[in-house]
Amino acid sequence: MKEYNNISDEKTIKTNINWYPGHMVKAQNDIKSVIKLIDIVVEVLDARIPISSCNPIIDDLAKDKQRIVVLNKADLADDTATEKWIKYFNENKNTSCIAVNSSVPQDIKRIISEIVKKGQIAYKDKVSYVSIEYKPIYRVLIAGIPNVGKSTIINKIAKRNAADVSNKPGVTVRKQWIRVQDNIDLLDSPGLLWPKLDDNNAGEKLALTGNIKQEILDLESLACIGIEYLLKDEKYKEMFLEKYKIDALDIEDLDSYDILEILGRKRGCLMSGGRVDTQKASKIFLDELKAGKIGKISLENI
Image (cartoon, rainbow, N blue to C red):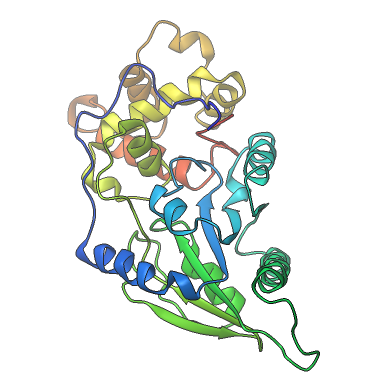
């Protein structure tokens, strides 16, 4: 796999992240039991962190299947980085990659179009002859880590509230088949996170983008890591300084915690005695980073 930039070379969250509800174990077993029926695997990734949101379990399960990589939340990601990731994934066997914003109807149509194209390839590989009257049913597995927008995409494709949706990670808790149009069956399943995130960099990025619960991490540490990342990239640094009305000269030689305090003062996060409420400042920064209010930022680049 090609090299990409890690979010933090110096600081990492000290706690290994272990978040693997029991229903995910069942989901993995359910998928294994039906994978032989599947023609196409659609993996929904977060466009800001394509590698950290790519589950190696899916790589194994989707082996030799027609595959579509959907980079969701592309409206929040750096356009230049996204274009590079599309090229990266398109180089893989049997794979096509598209970047989407799941709230845009035209992007949902593009996903459906890709499913049909891949379905035609899958059936061409399966059978040598199909009657002109026969319309095959394409069976599609929609997979992705929690809170990446998988269920929202399914609902938009099905044009109904077919799958449970929430802005909290880990909502879909059951396997279900959903008929779309006349010839597409979608299999929804719970978001699959790998059992233990030993790679702290991946855990940090998943938390910064809201794909795992931020409550399981120290908010101040996470905010400091996010600030450090933005300040390492000149374009992102400019976005950060502009958003919080901070002068570059005022933060020279300061560490990320001191900068967090400046941010807190700028946003009025003050307690008695004029002390900065760094917990509140951290939450403001993390919420705005996650929502794209600082700018279009990718935490992984090739």
